[in-house]
Length: 342
Image (cartoon, rainbow, N blue to C red):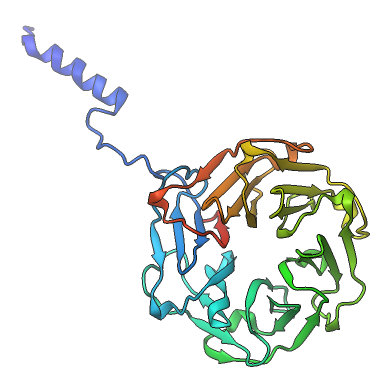
């Protein structure tokens, strides 16, 4: 059989196209495509949502900005993500309220919250919040001044509400941050002025003056204006310190007893890019020992450190990733939340 001279060439070209796939494929946008996760960051008057959060780095553009008069957002502070229900809760200091946004992974622009919770005479300037979704509890905890306000039925909050707390837990210092350890029914409370972490047992039923508290404090702790709290997969307590600035990590063994105990690991030094670290969120699904996201206000950045379990004392480590730059929309950074499932 006689072969046409061009046939062999066409076959070769076709095979090459099938192998490399790049000749006929459209050019892909390299920013966050093919990755997963949603990262939420609070600025002075808005909430930014970044797609591809598990890989996002450098000067990336947010996929959505939640801002405008209908949002009721005013001087927002810390945020909390209820991942299973796709809800975003905001400590809305300027509005003396807690805002709840539904369908958090999809909303954008000037959208109203599902709920705006106020409490006349009680909620004045909320800075942080936590929820307990345990069956039979369903509680919202709000740090405000020297008090933690406890509200019931947090999962069904809807509309403009002016509710009295079911309980008020009193501390003797202005609260810088709170973290709820639901599994052990205890709450970590940052005393920024006193360079201490208070550990409150029986958080779900505590009422009035905080009782049975143990305290991590003293010169050995290296705590300096603690501002953010997180727990890693091994139950170690991670604390961000505004002065230094540093990140300190305490073993789980010190948590029940407290005391003047030294951290087992810490981040410090110019390579860390820490300037004013605040709220943190821990991603247990990354690396061999997780990944730590740090909201840094003065750096206008999200600093991401891989494998905190491998840190040692005074590690001057460079972040594995840093989200920063003019495209990000980050100016001040007050809070951070992460959804690894979407």
